[in-house]
Image 1 (cartoon, rainbow, N blue to C red):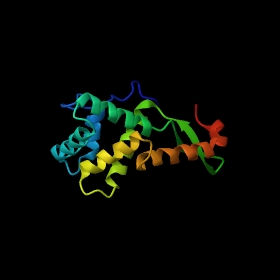
Image 2 (image 1 turned 45 degrees about the horizontal axis):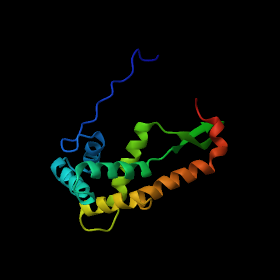
Image 3 (image 1 turned 135 degrees about the vertical axis):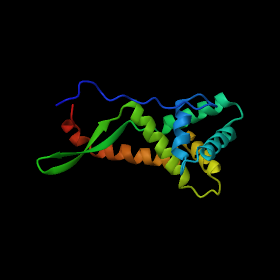
Image 4 (image 1 turned 90 degrees about the vertical axis):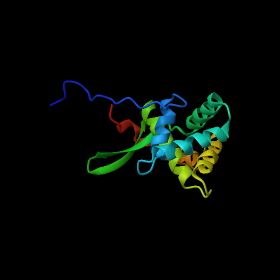
Length: 156
């Protein structure tokens, strides 16, 4: 039986310095063991290294995230006892979530010594359309393109 009303969505917390939900979510993703102050310092330092002007650094971050956002993803669908990888469109909220997650994971895989330098360099790489996060997006797009023959069987 279906619910009468949908689940209540929680509002994402805005960042106090940039007043942007994307920066707040990035801080929460970078946070380890509840150390939000340390995570905020990492993100703010990386953004300050991008540009001393807050608005400009936020614009650069959003441009980097735009370069990372995927347009399609692969969903596994079972039909007739077989599993097929079906490409599917992604809503804008999930695109942003994946982009932030990929940016953070690619930055933390880098070899630099300090976390803010890793994040800064990954954002710069994303701006120039290279780096780990963009590579991951390209891999997802390549898989979706390879499995486009099954796109007719996705759920409506």
